[in-house]
Length: 230
Length: 166
Image 1 (tube, rainbow over the protein chains, first blue to last red):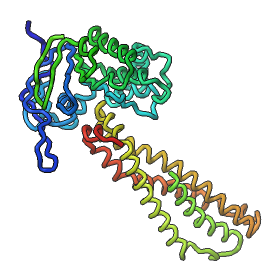
Image 2: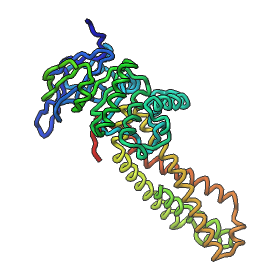
Image 3: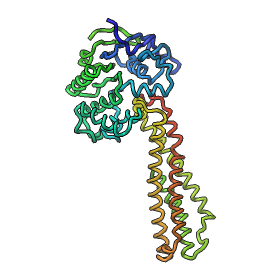
Image 4: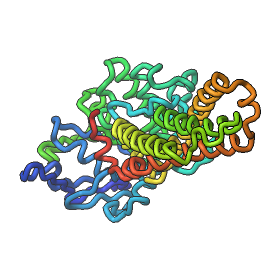
């Protein structure tokens, strides 16, 4: 069966020079990710997971190799086009939620729509709908400090979906949550992957997340060690 | 905001004191043509240094927030506009607070030294011009002080901003 490829990594490498020493954070990664796939990236700390995320997300530029998203080599995009990609095509979920503390849940979720140039009322309406869909319809006007960790991650998930991205990049989304809350977040992400057909790429150590995914990519020392089916 | 309020109140105190003194019949008693200008300039320079320093610290403390916004699709101009908008609001509030504080101090001083008459006979147009001028000045000070930090914030690479641990 031929997959509809949304992301293709071709000999991807990222080197850092620290104190005269070259650190190979990623060294020749080749990978194809299908549209609507749920992929887990697993590896020890310092294995290159975050670097891989940053390169797929257009947050950093590779030392060598290419990242293609929908056939477009993103290393050729300028700053404006990369911002467009991050805004419309990719949704980010962070381990530490990264909500803006002075904004309410509703405003946090509506924020990406502001960057996308969506009219304010429309953005807020959509944010309300998304928050309701993640079970926070009664927490719209709460600030992040007034929400539990699980609720904050739900807000972050709703925010990641604000501009209907095709790809969700989740960096250890259950890393700061307890067992039960982590399970809820996994179900939520799995539901989004299945119902909305979003491509979900998650860096994780969480066995439950790994089990829920279609494919598991094991990464070590900046290289893909092996790939397993979920 | 406090530094804007303080410098504007200092500026308003010196400038309005002269207006009140002249209306009380002491022309040139505390002329703004002498050391007042020098003191005002010092106050304004201190203010702009304080604002720049405060905003640089604010940018530093908000590295992750800026990185997050860039991840969500914010352009450099969105970040720039965010800091400039904040500067306009802070400049206006700081300027208004400084104006009220400065005028209150001068009014109290004038009533004590020259009586209510001097206060009531002060030319309204001069005070209005002073008020508008000081608000405008505080906006300029605030924007001037925030330009470099805002530019610095807007140019931050997202990956560097996200990696930052306060």
